[in-house]
Every structure is written in structure tokens, then in C-alpha cells.
Length: 157
Picture 1 (cartoon, rainbow, N blue to C red):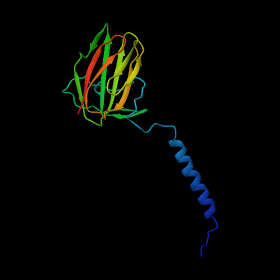
Picture 2 (picture 1 turned 180 degrees about the horizontal axis):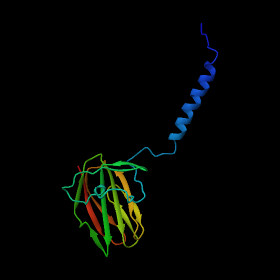
Picture 3 (picture 1 turned 135 degrees about the horizontal axis):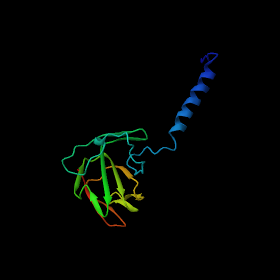
Picture 4 (picture 1 turned 180 degrees about the vertical axis):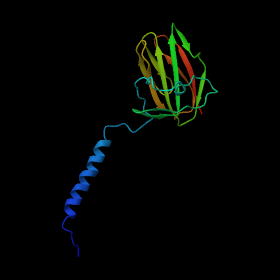
């Protein structure tokens, strides 16, 4: 025999409504961090250590932003008068790391990460970013399309 308490129906309705509301707030968000995202440029409040020059000796430097998850590796490149700074080299990251590449170019261009087929428009003078989970191992060129500059080679191990 099943006995129902007088307020149990109200509790069931409220609980169902809360579960529905929680599920609805999760919809529309991309939970796959391996998808490339274009993000706003880093804020001036970020410490200088939040960026790392693409050299093999650098250790991963976490960077936290309220709008994006913490990244395992932040790589920042500047292009001025067809010169890449820091100079073209190799950057090594671990497989599975969340990587954010931020590029500022003095002319409009397009950033492309080969092998991952990711890109971002580079408006002149404005930083643009691409963020992805480094799930593929190998050596991948990161370049600009219009000016055909190799920014660096990404090594994923």
C-alpha cells in the first residue's frame, strides 16, 4: 500500500521545475573545449607572466579569465612590418593541454593552425585569439594566410 503525504505533490512539482531549470541553463553552451573559439583580447589587468614567448624552454603558464576557462598554455605573437615577434621557432605543448594563441598584426590578415584547421580573422592592430584542446600529436605550422608568414611550429607530444 502506498501512502502519500499531504505536501508531497507540491514538493515533486517544485523539484521537477528546478531540475528542468538547471537543464535549460546548460543548453546553448558549448561544453566541448576542443572546439576553437575566438575570444576577446586579454585585459590589461593580466600580469605580464600570463603570456609566454614561443620557446621550447618555457613552462606552461596558467592564465585565468572570467569569460574563458583557464588555459594550460598561452602563446602570444605580434606581427609588425612583416616581422614576427618572438622570432619564428617551435613551441612544444603536451597532448590534451588547452592552448590559446593570441596574435596581433599591424595589417588585416587571417591566422591559421594547420592540422587542426582552426583560424581567426586578424583585424589590424587588434589582438585575436584561437583556443583549442591539443588532442592531435605531431608538428603543426601556425601561419598567416594573406602575408604567408610562419609564426611558429606547434609541437604536440
